[in-house]
Length: 217
Image (cartoon, rainbow, N blue to C red; front, top):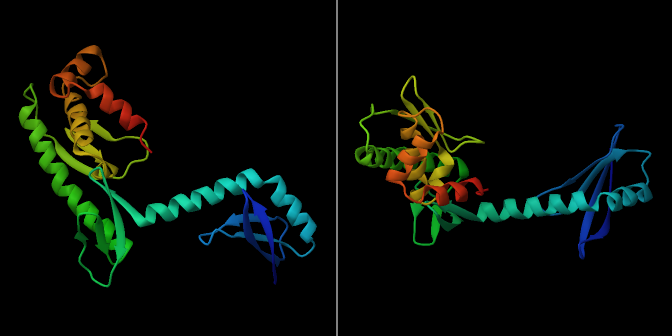
């Protein structure tokens, strides 16, 4: 294995390119956390070949750099109930929520804390919205898990409501809307006019909240 390096300019930034040559057919380009470019290639690839490859893939490399920058920023910031907090790493097992910061010792414990908060808050909000729901329905069981494409799911057969863990990052008004949405499915399984009319009785601005959630990343 042979290693070497050089510098290139992308988006007016001078970046280090670290090249590793191995016994392999293909060439791979990656941008790592240090925002430098890492190229893994075979022994016959020249510097000129690599420079040409980087030039031809500048757009993709620029996107990789942007993703790494966003990832680093997200690791410094933490959103909880609609408010952004700065993450501060400390040597303590306790998670401490301050006015502007969250003190934590590792991401695993932070996630466990977040799940614990969600279990308590989601159940509290479910009870609140169930008690003001205008139609008498069975009290549903609650599941909380991370979902990629849905904020909530209602199983009308088992009377189970599943809420997306990511809602713990949003303002409570979005959580309440999703809960009412799923409760309404216990009356109307589909999204017919009567369904939305029922949702609107509890959440008059549901259209606005629904649109904002659909645009959330």
